[in-house]
Amino acid sequence: MEKPHIDHSKCTACGTCIDVCPVGVFAKEGNKVVVKNPDSCIQCRACEVSCPTKAIEVKE
Image 1 (cartoon, rainbow, N blue to C red):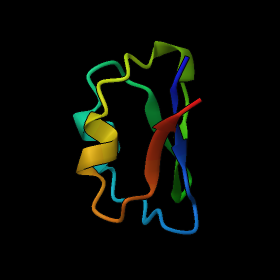
Image 2 (cartoon, rainbow, N blue to C red):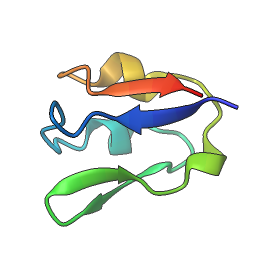
Image 3 (cartoon, one colour):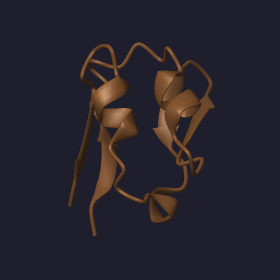
Image 4 (cartoon, rainbow, N blue to C red):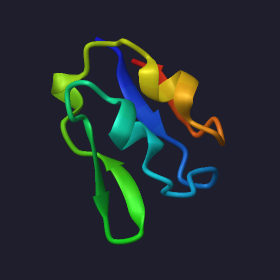
């Protein structure tokens, strides 16, 4: 099953992925975004296409 992975070297913690995810996979912890609920991912790829820095990849 594919799940989102965040490249923290590219992530600016802008929160776009949190806003566009329809099932609440992402959360902000401190000053970074984390994949909080990976098993909820429905592989819609909204996070991947919306990320302004291309820091998210949906993969196995």
